[in-house]
Image (cartoon, rainbow, N blue to C red; front, side, top):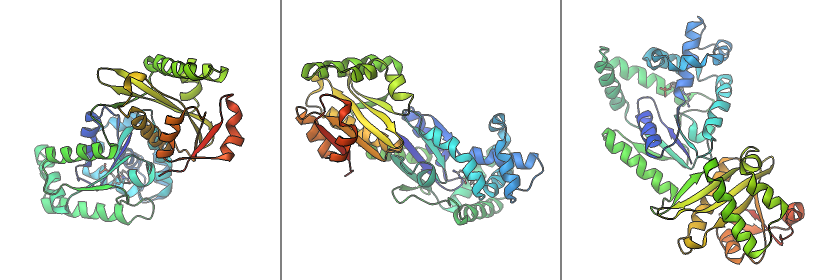
Length: 366
Ligand code: DC
């Protein structure tokens, strides 16, 4: 699951992103630190942050710079805002952010353009905001606590200027994605804001207290094998292509850019699994979807399939399809319910992959 947290300076988006990462056990990237590092590097090399070439050269900053506390200063924040208007800088930092967002299991990223540019496919998008006066007050309190005596009016002026630059820049301006949930924290305390954000994520994930999606790790590989081998052998026979994938999930699915998800039920453990096998640029075969007998009636299959479709979108799938057999009627019904349609072209292109294939479906969305 990718969670995008955007918002203006001092809106509390960093605090909220960190809290969400801790709550949902996801890695977190404060993308503002990347722009701050570029701003600082320009400063160190005596360059001009408004000059596109100087700013682009600074994108090759050493990683160690990211740990320097000075990056958090107001002065470096101002430099960061100035270097961030250059499209070359944004492009140079894009891959790093995108790769972070796409790691297996997902991530939380906070910044200005996460929901719009870096991860438009994020499952949850929050846009955190608060009035300029309130943001200035929070920043002022924070600086006072660090013994930094700055006039409130000066901070308010700086924040307004930074907002104007971030909002008005031509490339990836600061704005809420159309599908973002806007959370105005002007009248919220810290805990209240975090609670509202967690609530928003749970709602967006369509969370079920009795089921949980688990990302792939090697300790779960045996469940991937056993669950699938059992149902396939009960209805068909394991074909060489099945064995290859079930016995080498990391090599055959994960390494080529696909993914495997699991569904877990408390007290029962892993009760289902499904893979996305990358078969070409943007093409993913949804395959090896199996749910254990003991989880019947829990709608675990539907919960898992929804998660796998979301994951396929995160991975950039433009052609998501599956191959099956008419005997798997219940599964086919579920695929239809969630947006797959029967497709002759998929059958012609891929149907020969399995002896048992007589049904081919393409995801058209709902
Ligand atoms: O969030 P922050 O104050 O650390 O960000 C510093 C500056 O970096 C901000 O004024 C604009 C820029 N920035 C950006 O353009 N895009 C991002 N995703 C994050 C930060």
